[in-house]
Length: 68
Image (cartoon, rainbow, N blue to C red; front, side, top):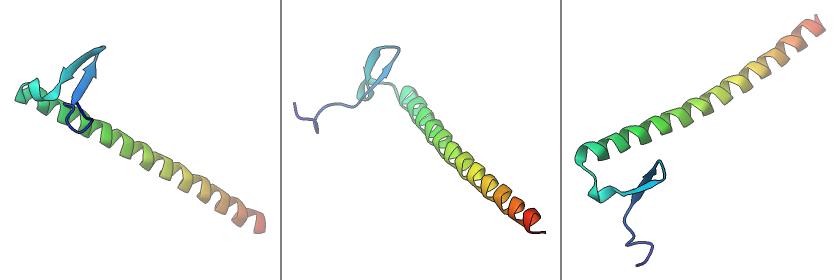
């Protein structure tokens, strides 16, 4: 069987499940979990951007008060 024809699976607690064999409710739960993982990743990136912006502003503030 080629990689293209291999059924999609998900592993939970060391047990592998074939997605096509799951109920519609179970598939929906997988979609929810995937959505939450994507949101978490996006929030982490936003936090990194906020931290970088804060560090930049602290540097700008230091420059302003040192020059005053």
